[in-house]
Image (cartoon, rainbow, N blue to C red; front, side, top):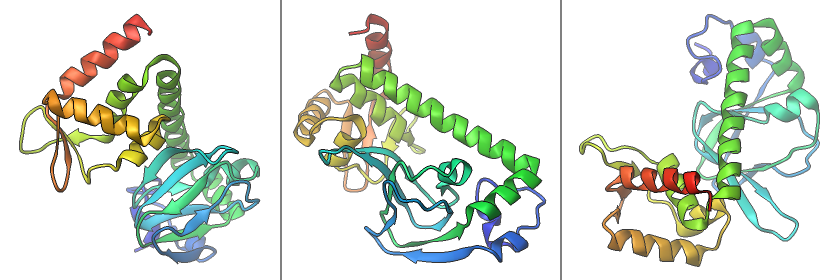
Length: 228
């Protein structure tokens, strides 16, 4: 079975991936290792087989904004492969893992010779654009507090053992949340304290629990409606 068969872009498709895998490289990486950096001229596409990575942008002053965190089955680097423009983001490993590194020419051959793969890539890119558009609107329209509510909802998943609650596992570090919504760590700490006092969140050893996510969602909806 092809090693790339578990990648979301190819999963369930009847495609012989072996010829494409034969022209790719396999790269193991360690935590904090930089896989792709800003303005690199490289155009390889990375398919994440194991481990997790973080995609971020950095301003000239050194301020970082986190765009995504990716897990096994995801891919990155497709933009540079398609347009040849130097890398627009940094990708750093969060854990130990392995990636398939495919040259742009091989990736485009695979893409253009299999329409279902191209359609999936278009849908993936469209979903990322929609998410970035939503975050841009929040950054423009919402104050820090409501951006935090929205980000917590986005990061969380439904809690299986309790109806209505949502959970973020593992609990996010305050400086990471700050980098995701564009503020300082101290501001996140203050907001988390207030949310805890309100009984809206609870931090355990392994998770951050959103006790009443519907309240957070209602506050975001109201803030967008009043546009403050």
